[in-house]
Image 1: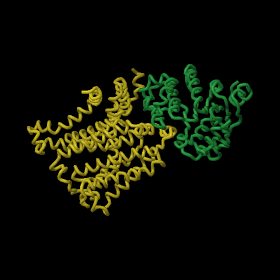
Image 2: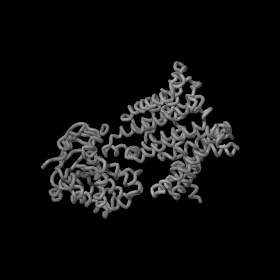
Image 3: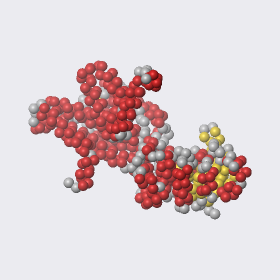
Image 4: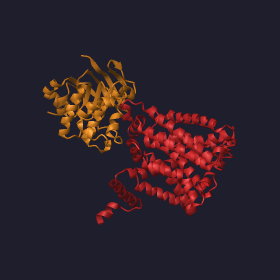
Length: 234
Length: 361
């Protein structure tokens, strides 16, 4: 299967701290891959490293076969990689519509995708003129994901989408992320194993800055010992 | 009137009424003095001339405040060197007219090039420093400029610490003989720049600037080369402030070196804090309040005016943290909440523990 993203022995430092100490994995085109691991294992840093926000000191990252480490974040994003950071990183001073329009990479992106976005997140249509700061946590998360849909991203990196959300909102979110995977590849960081296992076809476990295990999600679901060892869940 | 025409009037009614009032102001003031519109037109009304002069100063300050609101209020670039943008315009205009005998259009051409150059100079440091470091670097650049204009070596051109004097202003725009014309020219320039700024901040370009102000990293993650957007805002701001500086030289008999100092950057900051940061209207209102307060207090209180002025600004910041226009735009309930918070902050400033008082009650 063709790989859209390849990470080879990535080492990332933040200041003097050696955060990623050898992360390697590949992501097949059109799949949903979950990065799993305990708090502080290096999952979010892995996404930030891919985006060029914390560039790797050693190793290689390839997107569609093209080496991207060393490129600046905006250059990486313009290749067709969308990033939905944790904590619902929307623009609080902009309205819902402005938040969506700002994600246009080509003129008319927003108009083209409007129908699809509002069918996925009908709430946003109602709130179109409201400032981001006035949305609830769930609505902000929807907006953050919707924003990543405006441009034609071939790879979406989503960090902790279900964090702090009510179960009923998470249900809707799972449906939306599944829909996303129909058009693009998704790499997901998710603490909630139940959510991750419902969504992802593939997984990568990161432990203390190293990728220690990867494969098909179905295999991990059946491997209770690995779940207990790496994720602390039974 | 068409529906779109009437909705335009409805939407901008306050702005249009203000503009109409400003157009009529010299003539209405003249009527109070018993001068006919014709006498006002031929610059014969003393009171009207005086008010025109005060208004010209406000328009120039408003233009300067607008330029600072664009880079600080909308793009989030805290510059402590903004006065340099204004001072370059002022000194260059004076030197070009006085020392080199250029005409106004040639001066304007050179001014545009200089404004572009100084924005690019600030732009050099943009990708390398952010936040307070950017503020300090820009302070350093403007301090160098301040020292240069104060230096005796360039005294023949700049007037050194005395200031630039004796600039011959072309007759058709001279504040001595054609003040009403200068009034309308300055007002027109302000309105044109206001409309350009409004268009800028409501455009996709302005939207990205607002996003940069809130979180530059997020804007980059959407694929924006934020450096280019910040540079665009700096260039427009520099051009505006330089034009404000040029108008200052045309209107004032002396260009004081004070306009190149940190104090004049603080003036810009103060004006937009009073009016409301990141609102554009706030810059205009802030400039008017700043100049009128200063004028009124100095007239009646003399030297004590600075103290009272300072106290008023502190109260405005305490009670109206979003500025006058910013607070006006908030819902009334929120405004009342801000008033209450203002009282709390004031009581805390004078050493009254609000929580302890409340618990005793």
